[in-house]
Length: 434
Image 1: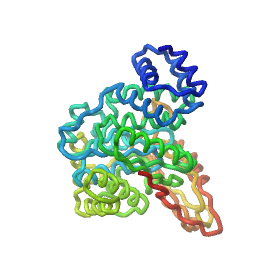
Image 2: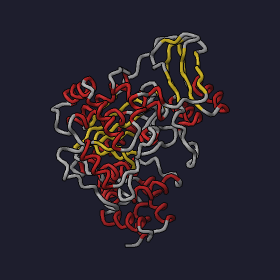
Image 3: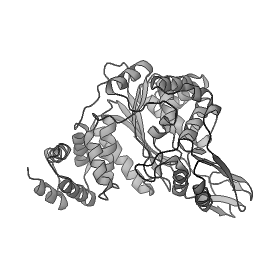
Image 4: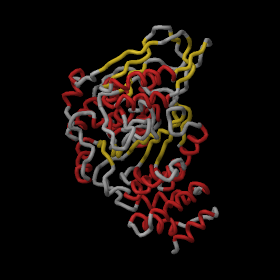
């Protein structure tokens, strides 16, 4: 095949066959097709789009650029969850132990923070000693032993994805639904799963800020999962305000611990129970999502979910003393409270600004080589639709970067829009696709 001809074919909006897409992906992964030619293909795909079949072909080529993990030697269903990312989105830390405690295997390969959103791996690494870089053999041993593993992508899993994503990042081709779909699904399918629950965020704190774009991405992900004969649910969920109250790596681990110990944080608990309920249903332990939710509640109230979290942390070399005694965790040098400057109903939040404020405090990376401060972050109290009084505590910030405190405070206060009229509360789960 001729690379230039295939680029021209896609540039002109024509359909590429499975063999042609496989040729492009394999050639690029092996270094036989140079960056500049594959960049041209990505831009052609970005501008002209890929249909359902082409998206599945691209996913398949990326998936089989490495190994597909074989977990058939482990009894029971294997189900995972993927979120498109947001501010305060810590559900993976909550639902993995719940679902594993319910008897379903959770082989979870996660990612790091991207832009203003937090990453599961960064959160886990805030637990001293926790190892997310497990070998493939250890990955299998941990799942076999406790039913769940929370790890990063190994070099054997979908290596084409890592190479292609790096190129998309510098060629303005990130925001393409088919390319996003292939990136997500190639990694998830490589885990050896039977089912997948997707949490597609929409709103100011999400990558997909437009609801229709979120629906389109969810449908693309569901269609691709089905083309690989995988059971799937996709939840469209709101990201116009932080999920829960805690933002920042250790702070989010702390809030997850409290949920697993039975504390109620309305929105975070609601979403976690729905996601875990769907996973339990896909794993064959419940006939409906609601039945799965009831099983999830039982896993929390019985203490089994928290015990499972301790087991996971210990098996991945994390120090469980900090999980059992959260007050022993190191504190930030600076802790400041932010108060409301006027009365009103909270009409909206620019959630992107909340995420950026947490980055300024040290909870994320502004540059690729930045070091994350696991202690840094924000406790953000109000929710959209609540009445706020002047002088009321809005947020607390934690950081070692004294020079960034004022900028973070300004971002936080300017992100709030108050109204004299009572604002409706936001519906958290907007739609469920299956």
